[in-house]
Picture 1 (spheres, protein in one colour):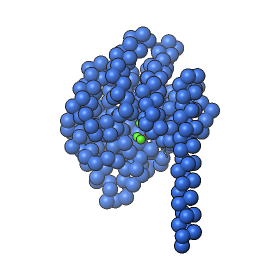
Picture 2 (tube, protein in one colour; picture 1 turned 90 degrees about the vertical axis):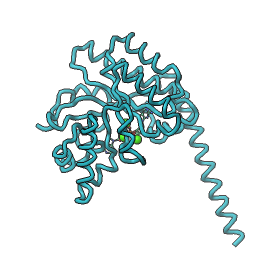
Picture 3 (tube, protein in one colour; picture 1 turned 180 degrees about the vertical axis):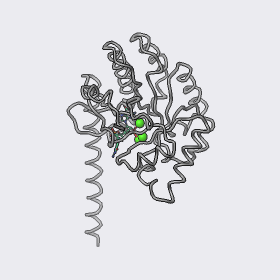
Picture 4 (cartoon, helix red, strand yellow; picture 1 turned 45 degrees about the vertical axis):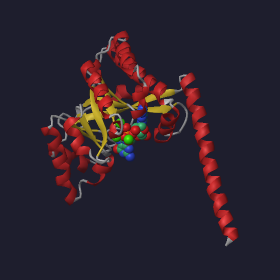
Length: 275
Ligand code: C2E
Ligand code: CA
Ligand code: CA
Ligand code: CA
C-alpha cells in the first residue's frame, strides 16, 4: 500500500514537472516570437446567411512554424503578461491588412480581433489603436473587437467605460463564446456590444428538438436588443439552414472555410457560399 502510494505521488509529480517544462518552453517560444516577428494571423470568413457573401473575417493568431494552438499559448501569455504586447501586434497587423486591401482596391471587409480581458491592463491601448488607425488611414468601422464575458468579472464599471471609448471611436464590439458563461442574457441589456457570437457548443446541439426553440429565442431576444447574431463552429448544412430560418445574421465555421493564410483569402474573397 505504501509502495503504491509512493508511485502515485511520483506520477503526479512527474506530470506537474512535464507541464511546467512545457509552459517554460512555450514562454520561451512566445518571447522569441515577440522579438522576431514570429506570429502570423489566419483569417476565417464570416458569412451573411442571406446573401452568402463574406462580410468580414476573424483574425486568429498562430506562431509561425509551430503547431502550438492558441488555446494553449494564449492562457500562458495572459498569465505572464505577454498578451499585452501580443495583443498590440495583432491589432497592428489587422490594421495593416485593411490598409493593404485598400491599396489594392478591393472592397474592404472588416477584421475582427480577439481581445483578452487581461489587455484591460494595457492602459494606453485606446491611444495605440487610434494612432494605428490614423497612421494607416484605416477607418475604425473596419476593425471589430471580440470580447468574452470574463472581461466583466471584475472592474465592471471601468470595463464599460473602456468599451464605450471603443464604440465612440467607431469600433464594433462582439460578445464571443456566448452561451458558455453564466448570466449571459442579463448582460446583454446593459453591455455596449453590437453583436453576439453563439458558441460552437450551442450550435453543436441546437438541432435536437428540445433545443431549437431555445436557439430561436436567443436570436430573437438579441434582435429585440438591436444586436446582430453570428453562429460559430458551423460544420454542416442542416445547422446553417435552420439558423437562417431562425433569423441568425451571420455564420462562421468549417462548412464555409477554415481559418486561412492571407494569400488564400484572395481566392475566396468574392465567393458566394450559397451558390
Ligand atoms: P475563439 O475566439 O472562440 O475562436 C474560434 C475557434 O474555433 C478558432 O480556434 C477557430 O479556428 C475554431 N473554429 C472555427 N470554425 C470551426 C469549426 O467549424 N469547427 C471547429 N471544430 N472549430 C472551428 P483557434 O484558432 O484555435 O483559436 C482558439 C482560441 O484562441 C480562440 O477562440 C480565442 O479565444 C483564442 N485566440 C486566437 N487568436 C487570438 C488572438 O489573437 N488574441 C487572443 N486574445 N485570443 C486569441
Ligand atoms: Ca473569437
Ligand atoms: Ca468563440
Ligand atoms: Ca473561445
